[in-house]
Length: 161
Image (cartoon, rainbow, N blue to C red; front, side, top):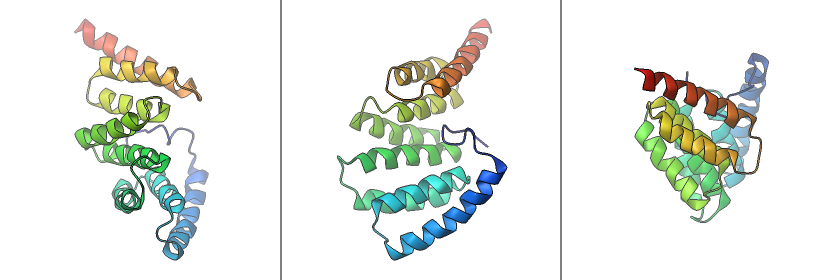
């Protein structure tokens, strides 16, 4: 299973609670099917529970009801990128994350996620570029520093070959 920025720190007990919350969220989405907030949260929960295909279906609905310049679009595109990365569809993941970053070049989490995709594609230099850019954005940089270290180690070992 691929690790995303959202997966870090999720414990087994948390997954059980998240599965329970997922069922409640599905019921709420059933009552308010066009709620961008609930659809977004449902997609995030599905990704955390390693159900990227179900997340993509939810995100397709969400992107239909969301205006192009909305913050929801950025978040939805980021989540779509994560789900596609989990499915190993790296080029599609890059396309979604590229769109999210185009809407907001300082979208640190999307930069981290795109860096992870580049890392998984063996493109450590490009991963480092995104991770370095993410460090410069507001927010918690600890995870980004860790991922940057992993990319540097990978890039260094590749250069020795």
